[in-house]
Amino acid sequence: MSGKKKPVPDSSRVGYGSPPVHSRFRKGQSGNPTGKRQHSSVERAQKIFFQEAYRLLTLREGDKVTRMPAVQAMLRSQIASAVKGNVAAQRAVIQWLLQAPGAEACERGCAGVSSRKGVKSCDEMTDEELMAVLKESAR
Image 1 (cartoon, rainbow, N blue to C red):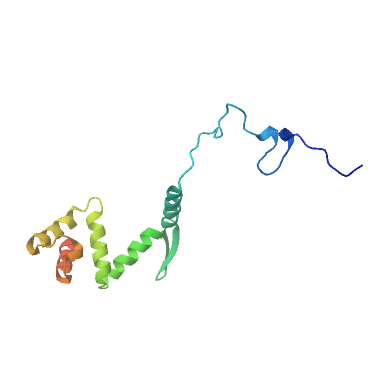
Image 2: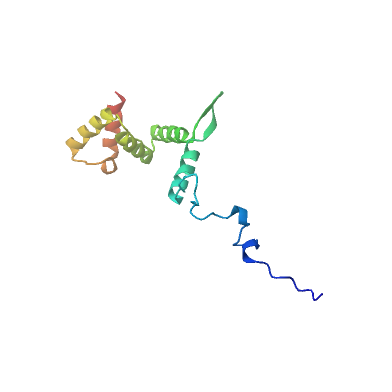
């Protein structure tokens, strides 16, 4: 014997780029028989973002332990910071309230300040105008 292997026919050869014959696509058959579409990278990123945003966190407030989604914990922290006097947090909270559905009361408060002072958005408001909006919306 010379030690040489016999050549293997192409149809039975198995390896990288040539799967076994029984698992190859058959002619005329779809490569996606279930019909599920592949999601884009943006859709996958959005799914991961929302999973993390609504992941339950365990928070301790004094003696009480509560579980809430991360988004709710973040908003609670932002509002607490705004109440303590952080102007950037106050602007963010007011902007969020203006964009939230059913925010007619805050819109009326901001519209009153805007029409008197000629201010068009919460970003352009002075601290005094911002405090006036907060006081009006608290009523």
